Length: 63
Image (cartoon, rainbow, N blue to C red; front, side, top):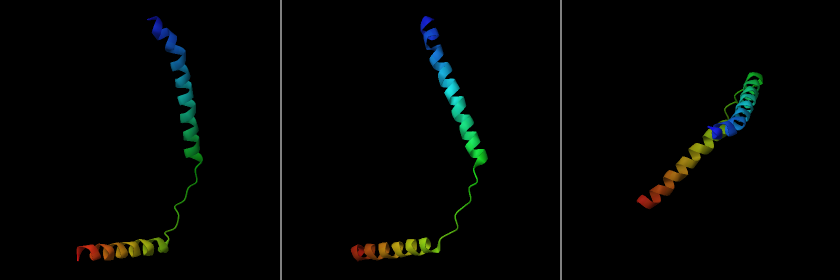
């Protein structure tokens, strides 16, 4: 029983710190003003080009 009493202050401190951290997270979420970035067309072209090059490279080994 004495061991539980010795750890009690540590658990109380963990509880206080957790409450402060959660309060900070709620505040950040409440004040966040995020907007989605616009779609960039270059990314789609680069991705498509990469797939074409990859398929051509695989075609060399399969043939």
